[in-house]
Structures are given as structure tokens and as C-alpha cells.
Image 1 (cartoon, rainbow, N blue to C red):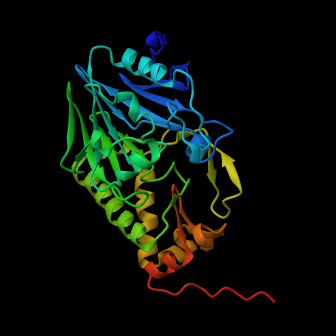
Image 2 (cartoon, rainbow, N blue to C red):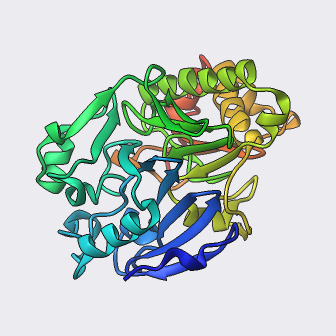
Image 3 (cartoon, rainbow, N blue to C red):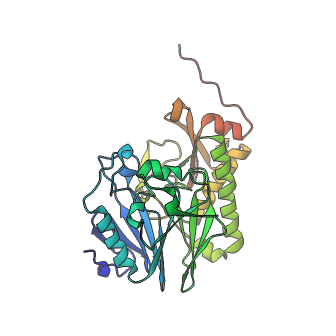
Length: 338
């Protein structure tokens, strides 16, 4: 069985079953699925689950890929004893603490192990606004197994002074939630902000971009208004796919990536994502002297022309007409090839 006794110091890790388990704080763990080279999308890059323990309670954030049944769309195959091994990790980490689970958004690589907790005493939570029917179509699970909370109102009081606050951050999904752990100053973001510094957040419509801009600014302003500077500067931002943080795009070319040794983002990353969105709104993203850079990337859904806009730690990918339209401009006409 899983033995957590070697997770003594920060950064210690243990490999068990489908996961690498890291100690990232005092009684705080990252349960990391490194992905499968034969899979695609979330199954290829892997995904991260976080577990926060306090005196008598524990909160798990996200549920990774579905290795119980597999997920055909991402070419994920079921794995033998997946449920048992996953629960072995969880139960040995939480001990006698009671457990709740909160999912950042209802995508297959963040809700995959839901079935492990059906018909148990574990409460499953998700933020308001997500498409709960996806749970049925993705994993053949009734949506009613989840309780719905309103972001900003729901807090998870874990005891011992540890409180997890919730914030709405739409764009990647319609009801995405990020979770702030106090007083440890850890922000768990799923896919809502982006996979990591300079790793871009792809927003596929004007509505998604507008929602993201409103919510990322609300988050930044809340942190500025309610946290002391020292606390903000020490913020650690844990995303849903830390494997993607190994490389970042340069300022001018998404294909020209550089290796980077980084396990989490920080306060500047959150601010710069807001800076990119705000610059797209006011048109300053076209001014390289301010530190903004943009370049065309391969076409997206329905062959949409796309551009990536970068500002230091922040990066967004938008359809070209959305980026120019948000700034009140018309996208340049594409030259007709002869």
C-alpha cells in the first residue's frame, strides 16, 4: 500500500500507482498524474490534484483524469485497480480527517476520479455556472452527486486557522473557480488563469474574453485590497497542469520555447494575465514599447486566425477578430494568395 512516511520535507516526493505525490506545504500535497504519451490533450500532459489537510478536516481540489473507466476522447485507457490505488493515496494522507472535494471546473481531466467518491461520506462541490450535464456525457455519472456553491460566498473552513476562499474566474469555462488558501497564501487555479507563466490562456470567443477580463480583474483587485503587500508577494500559484510549466514561449514565437525549472507561479503572473486582458481592451497590446508582443499562431477551431499576445508572465490566445474587436478595431484583411 501507499506509505506517506517519506514525505517529510517540502519537495519530498513518492511514486505510487498512477501518481507522483509531492509535499508542497505543511500537510499540503500535490498528487500529480504525469500523463501518458499514447494519450492526447489532458491525458497526454497529465494533471494535478491538490490535497490540503488541517486539524480535523481535509479539502481535495480537482480529481484528475478518469483511470477507472478511461476516457476515449482523450485516448485514456482504464487502469487496473485505479480506484483502489487512488483511494489508498488519499486515505493514507488524510488519516482520520473528514474529506470534502471541490472541482475547479467540469472538464474530463479535472473531474475524472469522481466515481471513487460516489456513495461515500465525501461531499463533492463545484462552482455555480458549470455545465453539469457534461458529467453524465463524459463519465456516465448523475450530476446530482455534486453540490453547487456560489463563488465568493462559499468558504471551506478546515480548522486550525486554515480557510479556503473561492473566486469566480470564467473564460476557460462558464463557472470556473480558483481557491485561495489562507494563511498559507496558495492559490489553486485549475485551468482558469492559464497553465503557467507565459503558457497562455486560450479564449475562443468575445464572450469568453470579456468574462475572463472582468473576473481576472476582480481577483487582482480583491487580492490587492484584502492582502498585505508581504502576503501578496509570497503568493504561490498552483495550476492544473504543472507539467506544462517546463517550457515557456518566448516573446515572439510560440514554437521557440525555452526550458524553465518552475513548479508554481506567483503574484506577478496573476497581475500580468490581467495586464494582457486590459491591454487588449484598450488597444495598447499593439505597442511593443510597453512590453507587449503578439504573433500569429496556427489556426484554431473552424480555421479561425489566432494570435498570441504576451506581456512578461502573462499570455492570451484569441481569435484575431476578437482581439482587434475588443480594442474597437477591425482585424487586418488577409492578403489573397495568387
